[in-house]
Length: 245
Image (cartoon, rainbow, N blue to C red; front, side, top):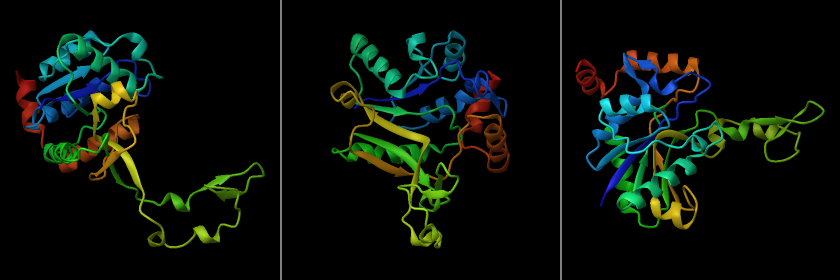
């Protein structure tokens, strides 16, 4: 069974210019996802899907394959994950046989543990009913206690027009747990992408991970830097060896 890690890295980010190459402890952000994928034993190939020759060169330095460049029309702000995944599936169909499982690793989530990604793959493979797997962490605050604002400026409930909000002010423990999808690890199936024309399908396994932050803004980048300085990374030694070459 072939399992391919795919790391999307378009060059046109707006929040942080060339975000995927920004240095984190002297290593480009994308390097963390590449080295992570290569440390997971079930993953057979690590591919970066990018529209940039510069990104491709740096990705290869850290051990990824870049067998194609993604078209510009699939690399804009409005391009979806489904778009780049379908493009990859079609490339595999032309050049070999698509793997059934793609491990989707966003470069904006650099602080991962390979053993956790391994557990996600084991769970996905063991569940034949699942159409995909998505990682998540427990929401620190319950959205059942959140509100909207109506046209008159008054709070209303999220689900309706109720302005009597006392029932939403109970202790957090009164409400069910809610989980936030995150960028730790997603796993999708090429058969679902091709046959159902969907990325995740209707039976998506929930895989709970430690709380994690993603890099989309300069403030989030500073937070990740602080977390790295405080807690370190299991990938640091491997990254240092490659960077020194």
